[in-house]
Figure (tube, rainbow, N blue to C red):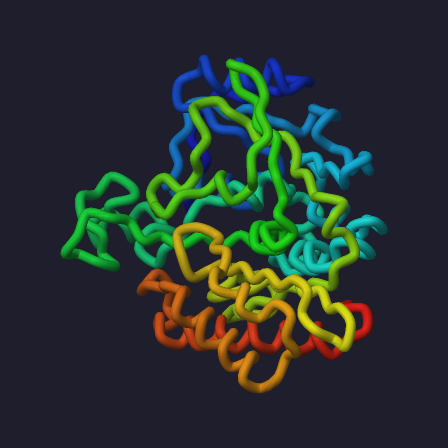
Length: 330
């Protein structure tokens, strides 16, 4: 059995104090629901000396309608998010993504911020301490070789959060607070294509809220993922789609984002050619092919990369077709 190591636990009641603690303490990490981090700490994958508990900070536990959209505090649980009326009606795919995370217990405790900042995963990384020691540590943690691609010095651990792609298709922005102050930036800029260090945050910086623009509110959207088991597993491949139709059911706007197939949640490019046209078999095939081409899964799960690439293309095509033929997109 694996046990939690000794660490210091801090429980501030405001963002400023939380950031100060996370910046000043050695090897400090933020924790809220802990549905992923606690598992990693028990396995020895993460070894923080200090944990900064965010559950007492009420300012990050609200969903607020503002003039230019909706602000979602990162302390909101996945259960609260999926059941919020504004999110369900105006940003449907985000509610679906929250509903797709693991099972009801995880959704009750897991948070928006935790899912957005989820650590990347790999078959050779997310194992017990004795397994990793017996099979040699990997590049991401205490090793000097990537078992997925031994010939290089790059980590291909995969991002597998569900919320990020559903928010990317709505062009979400995030508010980040650090010791130097706060700033707002596109959600896509939170991530980089690096399995070892996939977040662009500086030491102690905290994502405090997600902003969804009003200009895209009400656009039909959906999210779907494939997983080994239908109850708890992370996505082997997942896609979010937002599709707005105009007169004569012509495409006014379309966005697709992926998860589970790259070290970062990926926006699909090359969709502008579809704007202004109708959606037929040729266009659906194009969407499937372009998604498959841009998805770059590696051998980070027990399921072969070629299969995950085919699956994510099929999911994207199916979602687009469903939204195109639906009156509400829900």
